[in-house]
Image (cartoon, rainbow, N blue to C red; front, side, top):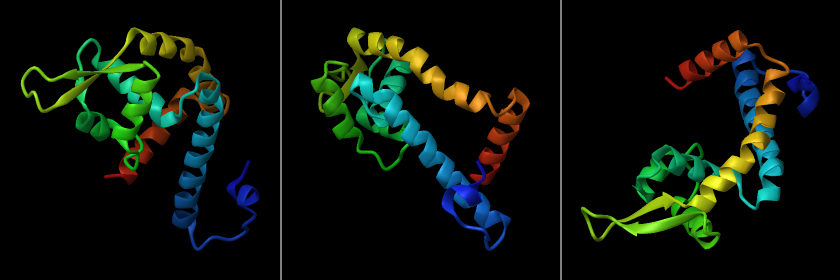
Length: 150
């Protein structure tokens, strides 16, 4: 559906303003769909992001600061997310071998199993995008979005 219809606005200052609003609106749309998708599993999109980061490091552990640097949502409180995931048994804390003051975080088998269960569900989000964009269009859009952030 066209942005104009979604936000009930007929005119924009220019195409660049419309683009910025469209990116924000679409990002929020994706986030809302992610929240609905992940809710049955008892985690948020930000917690899912932390689990994916840790799975990428598996079997190694990493610091909370490293997790925060890699997160998609830079406004997330990585420490709070780690605490919640630890309470659920999806991650574990380990004392760093090189610096005993630092605590490293690793995904547990329970966390890996949860991500495995969620794989089909997260593919649903991809399917919504694939239904409307070709592989070539998706690559072009990725390239355009990367250029905007340069």
